[in-house]
Image 1 (tube, rainbow, N blue to C red):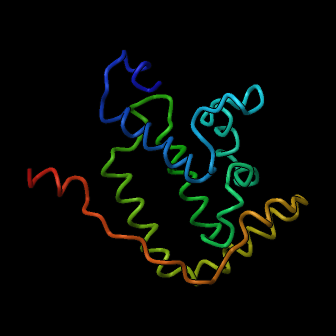
Image 2: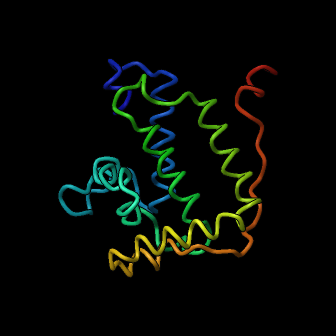
Length: 162
């Protein structure tokens, strides 16, 4: 769809949009297009966009099966990155280099996640005040270590070696 909006041409910015869709699929555990979902929810991007813009409602997008595998702070940052990648205006989207940098910073912040626990608890209290038990189930902060992700080379580094 991003390519169609860009006049049918694939561009670096349409790749960024596509990556935003992939991020959204990971966050939500849902397919990008699913005709089995209720009317108005067939398109994951269209359905989730209003929720991604609100810290109090973003939990509706997050897959509850990921509970405890991420901190709330980091989940919100990934949701925000997905939203930036999905910007309607291609010029407003980050470059893929900027996306990689943001993901690397999130990976580094995972190593210092214990410092985020207090912030997560404050956000949880704020959102809990909206009396949403579903939010508490799906986005609870965890101080447990999660397995380390594989380190892949930056895309720009691999392109220079070709």
